[in-house]
Image 1 (cartoon, rainbow, N blue to C red):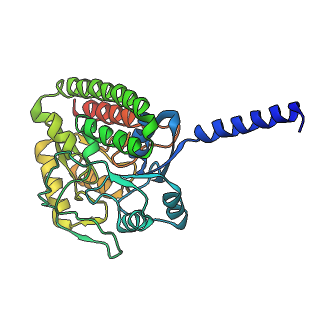
Image 2: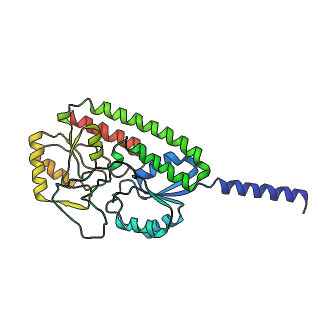
Length: 305
């Protein structure tokens, strides 16, 4: 073999090795908000696939064969936990034997005192709606631990990226602190007695606890539940009596129930929806977790004034 060919072969081998070393870590996140957090911390070292995409409802989502293939091809699977993901996703993750983590681990949770009268639809959902509220991401302070757990999972799967992930985690946590401070300032412009918001389902309790906002909804913590006529009638009277102005539909839900409730209560539904369990598609106002929170807070405060 000539010196030229040897040099060429060595160069190609080195390039192939570098390309292999630079191959991003395949990560699967159960839903779009979690996927965004994983990308923010993982940066160029990860390739994140999400199962439940923008404007999709994770409560009712059924895993498809393509989702199962994504999970099996991953090195790490991130889920929210706390019963947020449906039974089909939980089962697919468990059966895959791929390393996985519920990133809500260690976050203080809110126990659901379910005063909604409802029935559950008959299909296999696997949620525990009457125990713990899974929507921890609506509190930016709780997201500090959420992000830390994501970084920890990435480090376990990719130890060589420890310093890289660690620095990006610190940067992201600073962004979360700034978001938390900004949100508090916005809500503090509204008297506490006026901080009342009606949404389609009970997805904002952590935000409510953090910033002293009362949330009303015809459905419980899962969109799979069906509001009873008694619950809707009670809310209509409450909205009238307490003059609740901040009435919103959500991007993941059929708006008709909230629209009907608002009509009977004599109030107007806000033009912009809130983003509860999913981001917006590209070009929308909530393409990242931080943008989603800023959109939601801005719209709530504007409506409560």
